[in-house]
Amino acid sequence: MLKLIVTLSFISFYSCSFIVTPIAGNFASDPAKMYKELSLDAIQLINKSFVGLDKGCLQDFHVHAVGTGSKGTGNWVNPNMQKIFNPFKYIQFNVYMNASGIKIYENADEEYIERLNTLIKSDTRYGKTVLLAFDYNYNLDGEIDKEHSSFYISNDYVYKMSLKYPNSFIPAISVNPNRVDALKELDKWGNLGIHYVKWLPNAMHIDPSNQKYKEFYERVKKYDMAIIVHTGFEKAVEGEEFQEMGNPLLLRYPLNLGTKIIMAHGASLGECVDYDNKNVKKSCFDLFWRVFQNKKYDGLLFGEISAMTLYTRVGNPLLTLLEHPEFHNRLINGSDYPLPAINILYRTGQLEQLGFINEQEKKLLNQIYKFDPLIFDFVLKRTLKHPKTGRKFSDSAFLAPAELYCKK
Image (tube, rainbow, N blue to C red; front, side):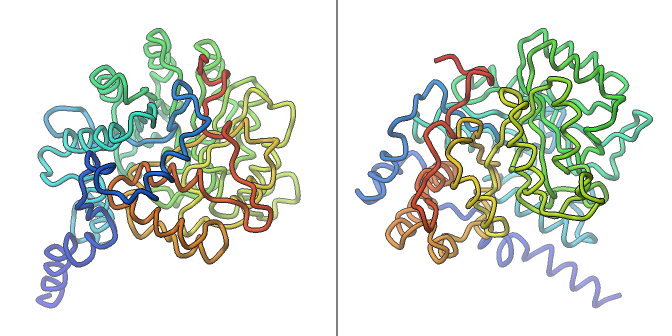
């Protein structure tokens, strides 16, 4: 017992220093001073990345709101994430806190949003970000399942933040269709003109192919909303028990009903069941690509490229998308912040070794990262190229299409 207590005490005391700080956050440079302290070559690389992009349609479609419920925000974090008796979740929680620039737990919600807004404002050309709410896991009886919920970010909170920082945030609500009041909640926000609904099926216990959701999808269509849906495996939050719900093939049901769907991450992680081929398992991305190429979903289905540059995902998904510029007008960019602030998830050396960037670009990107992980993520995607053909993502992959409410 004494050995256990000592071990847990060691984890508790050192997680934020020896374990957490080197792999998440540790940003000593002020984003506001970026252009005064970066090398001229790094500044030129940033400037080059913004060439050809209309700021009015340049959006980051995938930015998480984070909060613990401090000062009555209504947000919530599973207490198990904060207990040293669950060392993996405990360290994971501290990694997220550190990466998010949160120093005082009691001020977590406020500190996070201020840090995020500072990063966005470090370059006004970056445009607005879609700030994501995050609903609870619900069982099929409509009851909240907090045991399988990692956190909760309220719709009211992201809406309030969008009013407070209108030049930085576009609100995306999150409504689990298993809620007994799901339609009422959609009505509330649809009548306020909200366009985006966030789902993470693996974490929220949502099977997108469930025909009981038909009325939900019809309501989404009524308000001209689009559902931003995580696809592929989920590793950042609780989701292991329901991984198959991230299968892109399950989204053909709402698509066939005419629902606008944004497949986040392009299902770039994990293996999913191929329901069209004897239920064998295939790369989730291969199933995404099959659905994405179906012409009948033009104007309805969009692929979102956040997290594809994480070292665990780099490979065929990036190569395939770079090889097919004819589909870039249906791609959209997202950062998945705060993940870009977790140092260990990005390896520019790997990208150089694989030929996506060269040595000079690696050095310049590393300079940028120390100041602003959001700008780093954007410049990286604007810089990387296919190792053999040299093709890059087209400008259109970074601009919101008209179907997703961009008015040029």
